[in-house]
Amino acid sequence: MPNPLKILPASVDIGSNSTILLIADFEKDDSGKEILLPKIQKVEICRLGEDIYNAQKISKARLEELSRILSSFRSTAHALGAEIKACAMTEAARKAENGEELMAAVEKALWIKPRIISGEEEAAYTFRAVEEWHGKDIVTVDIGGGSTEVSDGKKAVSVPIGSLFLFKKMGVIPGPEYKKWEKEVLKGNPLRPYAKKPIYLVGGTATALAMVFLNQPEFNFKAIEGLEMNLEDLEKVITKISNVSKELRGSMPGLEKGRSDVIICGLFWLRSLLSRLHAESFRISTAGLRFGLLYPEKQEPNQGI
Image (tube, rainbow, N blue to C red; front, side, top):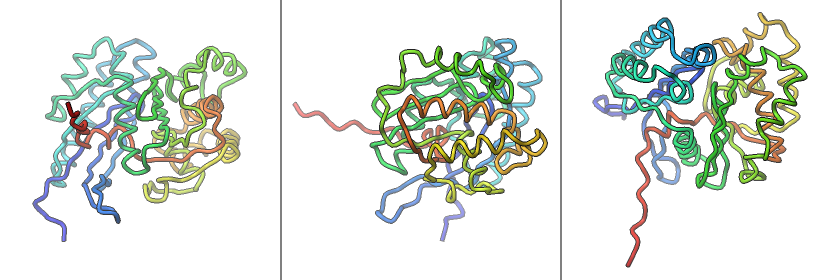
């Protein structure tokens, strides 16, 4: 029987496109290992990255909307007997000229001091989360709204490109200029060290892709977690969502909450990354930064003298 007095850990991930609340709990798997499993997850589209793209700072209106979202998250967590242990902000916050104002607004709404983390830290937290479920010998690819992080657990690269960034730059469906742009951005192939390894795709693009592919109207992490897809599957989804009207696209599974206009750009970018990684297939993971924030830091083994 669950302990009604147990305080569940919670975290908040404030990204460039969306803001996510996770309420979770540590449970033992079949081998007896304690893993973190989600109990409640709430996603709100906030699009901080749109302000950064347009003006390099978060507008007053966007700060007010974010504060409303975060106050709602705090109320939800407290009502369910959870405590928000950590809050991290990523690419939009890293670039915001009014970062201190953003930090103050978040702290006031959540009652916890947030952190603006580097791309490398973001990659490390994400890898840790996926590693706990799927093992070490993998590569994580986290496509966010404003940046993409790739990690194998030993090293990481953060590229300031994401689905929202591409949408603002190229519109809903990238045109012929995309190939030239892609070649320039990935010049020298910074992803070469991560090539030819099992890939786990993480982030909003990953979840939306899986839900469209499975035609799954409701988010269910058990149905999505570990889903394997190949390049042909990816192409079919790109074609499917590109060939319908804006209205119909917005009603597709996984695209209802403001992802319908950025998803095609995210999938174009994914296709480019997979090409550079020489990957024929990949798996979807619903883990990510918000999970990694709740795991205790790994203890380095004592070095004998």
